[in-house]
Image (cartoon, rainbow, N blue to C red; front, side, top):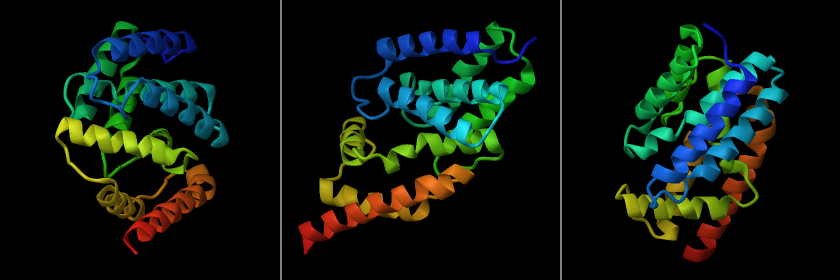
Length: 203
């Protein structure tokens, strides 16, 4: 048995991207290959800022790669399906059970409302919702609005979606020190922009 090496991460990346490209439903505009790659970059950014070990960085990279793979099976409870893909892959590469369990539990922690239980899961959870701070946030969130409509989750016009977004922004908080100090002010700035856009349209 072994830990999660850089080589395993690279093999996982090829496997996951290929799986998403071939089997992810076309209706998933937001939860796409690009989102997974964004979260992978995000965990690297946050992980480095949090000064975690190289071994833990590889661990959280695997979490990021597999966290949304379950969407190829089912939209609801995709996290559970994601853990099954991750577990199968890691077992095939003889990864120690303790690491597999941590990957599984970290992915499950991303289910909203997020419930991280350690530094790895905190990094993954913050990385998964780091789009709340993006300069092009409105482009990303429009993809999610369309995805919700096409998958039957909810149908909102842009103003209605803005109201739902403001509710989410108010209930959400980042967990890592980087998330609290760096991401939260950026998120609050986006929240202000949403509020201003919404009140302009309804005022």
